[in-house]
Every structure is written in structure tokens, then in C-alpha cells.
Image (cartoon, rainbow, N blue to C red; front, side, top):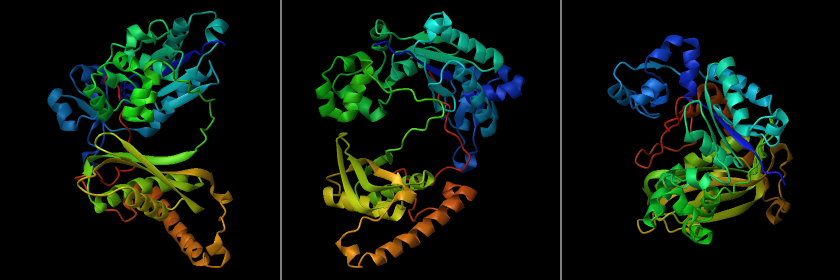
Length: 425
């Protein structure tokens, strides 16, 4: 069987590079794209190389960036411009393969298996050709990681920047990657890194050489997944261009600023998470019949429980109440059993227009009529809320939860803000 060949193409300093296309004078001064401090988005979401060399980092506040780099020029984000250039970049990628999967506005995976032979050049030469085309035809630069799997390809594009190609092979991955800090491995978060450090795991190689089952006992499935990633055993395919990934579940999780120790705090945390879950279900036209909750302790142990409903739902009120009942039933909320993180989700999904009531004894006896009427009323209410949010932004109206800054629950950002363009490597 032919070994896969995956490219990960990552645009360098993308938002800042886009701004420099229309304002070339910005190339010669330290500059950053930053949001609006009034809406708590007064942070750097992208910067050019000059600002980066001065120590400015993505997520620095405006005042932090100014302190590090006096005279830095700030420009507001322009979503339409970034989306337009992103499409142009992907059009070049699409000329080389139909298996093209954008991972974000500035990065894409390409399955290039067989392409070097077709074009009569090495994989590195082909990547360099694509880099040159993007640079000359569009005006932004990209870094390309090449490997046999998506994880190593992604790590390859991060390995050397800007405007570089890195080929990670089964023969050299240990030499290139195993010496790196464990935090450089995809999906190794801060808490996970801290727990691994306690067991003298400091590099990717340290983790790769541990027993997979032991890591599973320590961190659950996530530990085993990290072991697979460290050893290049990621088999996730690259999707066809334009192919939408089948949504099998919708979930949202959050690690809180401090541990939750009261029922009010748990309710607050679950409220914001289930609000997002329900909104996404409605956005995709889906309903689900299984509600799940994952509770993580300060020791990173995860307890997962689920409940199967007798009907399909995409209502925030129902999902929240069900999640709360799951926690009350399977957890002793209090100082002696703190909760570090929560994830709420809904699975067993079907298109909303195909969701039918599963008749039970109560419904057959006519006792379910009232609950069905209440559900229909709630659906109209939440649909009306969706329309308000589309017009005025997600923070314009909430489903009854209050902010609790102590645990990190705050209203969402001003609509139209963008995610940081993380390129600090």
C-alpha cells in the first residue's frame, strides 16, 4: 500500500500580511492587527515580522504591545479581505489536488499522495513550487509541512517559519520532533503538560517511549491519542474539497478559572456551554436524543455520563436541565469534590425535520401532550432568540445565565471579532 503524503500549508502572519497587500507602507514598520478594547477584544490577533522580532505576541493587549514595541502601528481587522485572500490561496492548492481540507482561514491540509510522481519532482520541490506561486501570485507567504500524517504535517509547517518547507519522514521524525517540549505536540494543553511533567515527561520523545496503556490510565483516551500522535500513528484522512464533515455530535467544554464547588457555579458553567450547544444544533438543523456530560477533576480524571431522552431536542432549556440532573445524580457537588472542567454535548443526531417523538406509555395515554406543547412554545422562543443574535450579535441576549468572572463565565465577544492568528513559533 502506498504511503500517504500530506501537506499542511500555513499562511505566515496571515492577517497582517493581508493588510500589507493593500498598504505596502506597513511592511516597513512594526504593525499589528488588533480589536476594540471597549469590547474586551483589545488584543493583538496578528503581527508582522518586525513586531514579532520586538517581542510582540498574539493575544498581547494593546498596551503590552506598545510597551514592548513603541511606535507600533495598529490596524482594525477586516474579515472580508482575509476571507477573499484565503479563497485565492486555496484556489491555488486546489489546482494540485481535490483532497483539500481547510483547517482555518489561514491553513489547509492537502493529500498529495502520488502527486510528486505525476509532476516529476520530489515532494519538497513540489511544496516549494506551491510556496513560490502563492508568494508571487497573491503576495503572502506560506510555510509547508510534509509528512505521512496530518499531525506531523502540521508540526512540520510550524517547525520553520516564515516561507519554509519541512519534510518529516518515518526516518527522521524522532530526530526532528522527539527533542521538542511536550507542549509542542498537538492537543497537549497546559494542564496535560503539567500532569505529564509530574511523571518526568518533558519532551515528545519522553512521551512516545512510555507505555500507551499507562498513559491511558493516567489521562484517559486523550493520553493514548497523544502517544499515537507522538509516534506518527495518526490516520485521519484529508476530506475532499467542499465535502462537509458529517456532524455526529455537538459539544462544548470549558476549563474554569477556578474549581467549581457550588451548585450555582455548576449551573452557571453548564448554562453557557449548553446555550452554545443548542445554538449550534439549530444552526445545523439537527436534533439529538442523547445528552452527555464530562466532568474533569483537578487531578485530570474525567467522569462521563449520559442520558437518553424519549424525544429529540435542540433546546437549550432541555439540554441544560438534563445536564444538571446528570451532575446532581453522579457527582457530590461541594468543596470535597471540586470540578475543574465541564463538557456538555448532544449526540445521536438526526435532521430536525426528521425528528419524531418516540411514543412512551405516558404519551400513549395522552399525558405527553402538555410537554409537547411546552416544547413547541420553547422552540419558538429559542428560534426568536436566534434571529435577535443574528441581527445584534451573540451577546445581545442570553438564556438566563449571569456572568461569573471568578470562574471565567462572561458574555461573548462583540460580533464580528476574529480568532487570533497564532504564529508565535
